Image (cartoon, rainbow, N blue to C red):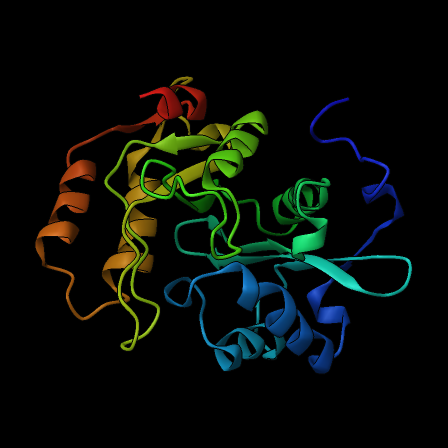
Length: 246
């Protein structure tokens, strides 16, 4: 069976857009799915997430997986960077009891065609914890970083060879270091051969998302990130399998 095909569990699920459910249901998604799945520094506030999903001018980039009883069991939320034509997988999370049963894979498989049709992204990117620094197996309930990277590799995602960090999501939270920025999908126009992506597209995203979201864009870590992109035509892509063996 292909990793994109449904399992017995996912065949019972229906997929709906976040814009088609109530604010109270979205609140439950935040409280019961997102909050238990992410560390505080990785998750924007409840008000920020719900505000983005319900604003009149919000980009409808979110999907929900719902079981036959009406329980929302997983979600994927995208963030659209129009100037760069980049879609970021902001959040992908599944209820703990449904993890490892194909729900996350189903959400990715449903989201990508939707995003391609609506936005024609040059790149679909995702932030992933580097298993070399998060090798503990789920001590706090946040999932297995090793298994997560293997899954994304099986789906064809590859790692951008840059020293990436997640920017601070608020003044009260720190940056999240030891992160990988992965390419899940790329338009041919954004590729430089088979194993690199267009540096200008990546630089545009980094400038908009990372360097402009903080008040400290000139520290050593930000400079290292800039230097990894400066003067490059393409940014190499790394295989997750090879990365895990390094």
